Length: 66
Image (cartoon, rainbow, N blue to C red; front, side):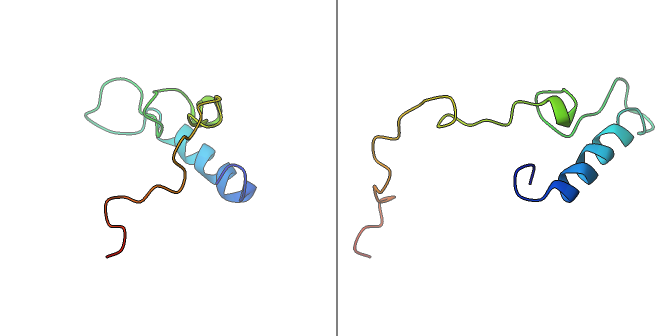
């Protein structure tokens, strides 16, 4: 979403900010991302982005030939 739909990303960031302290009965801050940081500061990279090699990119998932 961040890379392909900037308008939707902006909306998601706004929602993340809006829910920060907006839930009754929940102590502390609420975040959309599991790293518990604001969405626009969250590390959204994956293992491939960080240089991890994919040794079997086309390997079947155990259903080959079915």
